[in-house]
Amino acid sequence: MTIFRLKQLASTSIHAATGAIRWNYDRVELIADGVVHGIGIVFGLIAATVLVVLTAVYAGALDVFAVSVYVAGLLMMLVLSASYNLWPVSRTKWVLRRFDHSAIYLLIAATYTPFILELKSGAMAVALLIGVWCVAGLGIAIKLTLPGRFDRLAVGLYLALGWSGAMLYDSVVVSLPTMALWCVLVGGALYSFGVIFHSWRRLRFQNVIWHCFVLLGAAFHYTAVLDLVLT
Image (cartoon, rainbow, N blue to C red; front, side, top):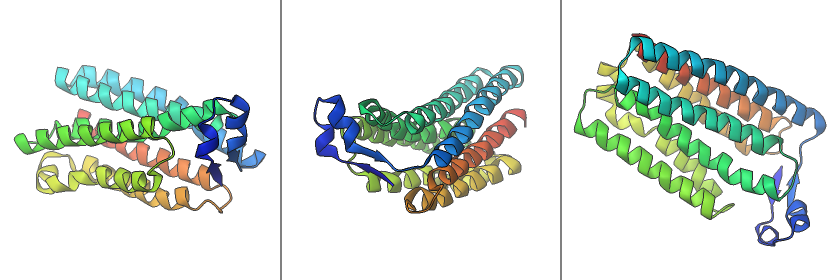
């Protein structure tokens, strides 16, 4: 559905950039996507505020830091996704695409932060956290400097990075509350299953369905972080 002609976008002409992007969603699809993004941002802001306040009340300084990183990543993903997907076709939309795709790496790393800091596996957990942020940083750098390239590879990297925590399975099972653990797994499964609709571009409302899966996955991960704080 979405086609970017990269050679045309290399032009400095705004008109050339506008003609280089075909955003083939009808009005109903765009309205539905706008509603989904609006719901995500409103509830995201409310949920983020509640989480930070509860963490400040019931947890320590390190937890407040970890949760703040997570909340920042979540809100940035929601805002950038809405900005890119709802912006009219233009050169600006092409720029927003870079940041939208970069925000996915940021969210993955930010979501990992509170959970990894909770683990009791010491050096291995620290190594995984550093590794996750390094890979996320590399992915962000590629998205920002090489827009439109390696998009299929990026999807695989999103999934691999998202499930990399399985390397610490034993420590995760021991350290995380049962509800938090299940919410993490369900959230990851929703994100992964949603990729099918992200790629199914001939399906009407595929973009809306994909974003619904993203919100559901984010909701389960949010619940996991909240349970981690309150347990």
